Length: 253
Image (cartoon, rainbow, N blue to C red; front, side, top):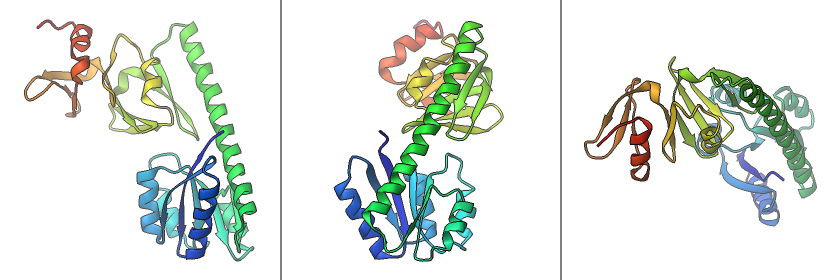
């Protein structure tokens, strides 16, 4: 079962303390990554901590939060609204809230909301895995390694492998840096793409990076061992991978 990674955005001490107390008694299903009393710091925590659920106790007519949220470049967390005004539930579901908790908060309402979030996250994960596996099976059966399916929780993008400059690990996510300047985040980790990307052109030079041989401009051996790419990015080559990398690009010392 999924463990929820959550943050709380609320000016109400009672709200924060209640959810903290719930976490202390239910560590198997929720990990509280942070708490914030302002919208700005809450959005900063979403950017840095990447929770999959946000408990949101702010005025429902405050559109500023949703304006900031819409500018994020990765999968948005599930929202659980909290309010003493039941009429705000309509506004909450307008923003695709997973659930609405009416104050005063009790543990039963929290656990119901969390299980709704878990169920939705699991359904999305299973759906994406099915789609990705189908695409990869088609590619394998036709020996078509021109494309890779990059999955987030809300969409799947088919990207030509030749357009990938490098892939970068970002915790449990992977960032794809493309020739057109775009950066696409996948909900899969870098290790999974090590087995999907065309082994004739892609090499994992570091635990955090996979590079595309097509886009290397030069190898630097000054003050370490580095790959310089055509987009002017320089990436380190891990010492333990240097010999294998030399063989990969057919260099001889």
